Image 1 (cartoon, rainbow, N blue to C red):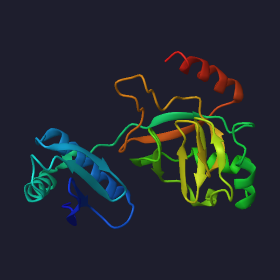
Image 2: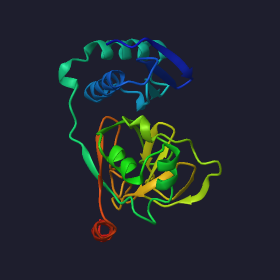
Image 3: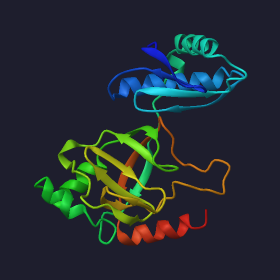
Length: 231
């Protein structure tokens, strides 16, 4: 799949668009394209950032012209083959949905006329594709949530959402890697660390991975949290 078009969006960035709607197919092409960029390094490219439907490529305008970079990007997209596609192994994310870790679980259940256990079952059933990272370091934007547990953002955002909180906003779900203000419905929390600021590779997750939420008890949460504290 070749990109639909390449646009100059600043004096040091081109955006390569692969689709107009969020889909697993578009995402696979984006990730395969990024892998090919890693294999075909070009002097002057600083970094690239995948999103739901596009890849933004930042470059040094003193080393590359927009026209030469566009040609390189189009040639790279044509060079993508089946070997650049892969089926990732899901990363397991343990989640405790019990109080006090899931303060909005009952709200989400009531909103959808479900029992809290139904929300937990539907939330922990699928494998979620990480379409992109954003909002804060290590925050995954996931696709694949059951629409039966969708719920609008909170009317008044919280000033402090604990790190590891698992939330729902609209038809999306995600995990807060750091303590932060936020308006998502918090239905649980994971003791697993997603962000390691002192490490060379500080972020556990990346676009293209899949994750699976696994329910754990409060005691299991504490046991895992104790182990994670040593990392």
